[in-house]
Image (cartoon, rainbow, N blue to C red):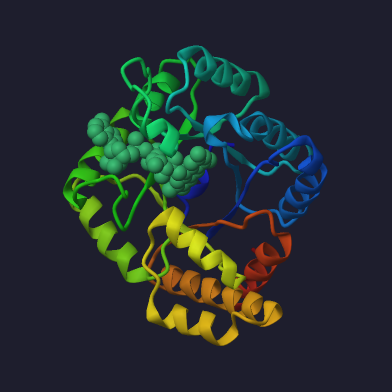
Length: 294
Ligand code: FAD
């Protein structure tokens, strides 16, 4: 099923993200966790793609097995930075073979090693180059792209960032998923600006439940997201107790989603980090509030 058909509905779409294992030793644990998440029957699931080849070879394996066993619509991530045309095309061909209909087209992060390499020979510099490749592949993929309510860290300003975002949409992005954010007002402000810039595709709000204190620093470092004082106080108060912090993080994420839904945002993607218990709690909380099983 194409995700665009889900995302255009006016009902709440709640989806979960999983990441593939780092090596074959952890494959079984990850497979079990992702199957448990699939058993929650979310609107769709996404599987990330390790930049630089780290865990990328498992992305399609996981997507294929969940799609086949649970019939949950799948979104396979693909990155392109520093990849050869041959690698990207072979991934796209594999997706076609496996019947993957939805692809998240990403550039991938510029690691310190990549930052210092000669970029002269790169065939893909930005996500838009991958979108063109997907469009030229002969398959009718539903294509997603990433967007940044708090600006991509490499952008000089929001105007420039939104200009490049519009290029991705014009190249064929059917929907956009946001970087995690912890203050909904940042999203509302961003939505106003992108709509004004003529970007009308569905936006999927990315919500990261922070369920242990150690996650905070890493999440902020990776995303550059603003951490509101309200959340900092929660971490200060409950961070030293694993059980309390887990529930507090789930409550904070649930609260964010309720506020989003109350303000007309119907597509929410939870960065569930291979944690079926966290995904299940958020889903149950929302089902209780909405009075229907999500
Ligand atoms: P781009 O859209 O290429 O943008 C990157 C920067 O370049 C921005 O500053 C943009 O304004 C600028 N830019 C874009 N086009 C142009 C242009 N034509 N000329 C000049 N500047 C331009 N990483 C992974 O490795 N694997 C994943 O599975 C993964 N999943 C993600 C999912 C989501 C929802 C998000 C938000 C991020 C994800 N990432 C993932 C991280 C992502 O790869 C990084 O944030 C990366 O730094 C940028 O990727 P992008 O696709 O947004 O890049």
